[in-house]
Image (cartoon, rainbow over all chains, first blue to last red; front, side):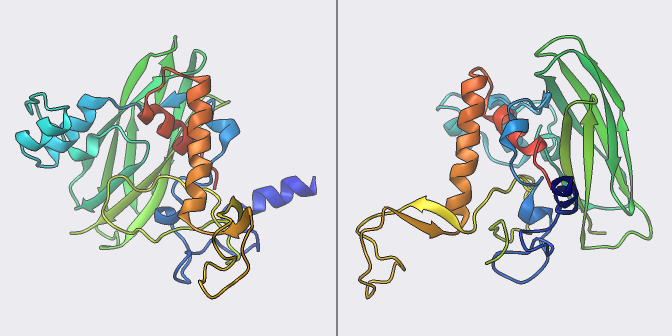
Length: 190
Length: 92
């Protein structure tokens, strides 16, 4: 029992029960330092859902980042790769969501999750203080392994939202057994 | 050096942050028997097979080991799927 109590209390604290701090400067650490948290091997072998990426996704990310076709083709094992369609850097199917350049205009990003567990329904919970945030759809049902579902996250700064400072939140998909958690990191610039 | 983790302050506008952290302070690590205990050339204490070390070089093998574990259990998962599994199950 005492172990459980200590464990819960220890969430963002180190082994001296102080808030986790930066390794070089004596400031309290943020998700930029500890990311989505400490690695958990027993949970990592059964994540429920994964954010998958293939070669084409990375090459489209380079297209959206403004790299020229010659450079991108060099990274495609010297096979010509033509940038086509509209790709946004923030749509890279990465397991965390970072939007460093928000204004009062709402920004919508897409993510696709692949089911790697049993069939089931996942529901979204999210929080991001000081911003408006929505996830559509907020429920995803999977009937088999390998099935993919896409959702959209819309984030908007409010007029009173602080500028030029990062705010940290999170998005969780859960089926009651698995928790698929992504850190959300946003900054309002204008 | 009392923190359970060792981290590098990376507040930049990278879309690849945040990711994860792993133990990196006071880690018992394999060590060169030719190196001195303190790594200083003037230190004559040598011949240790292990030493207590710090840094992201200590964190990295923890994550590598987990990646290997996942690849063994799920051989057809892509590198991105493995990284996703590690990131989305991290604990704060």
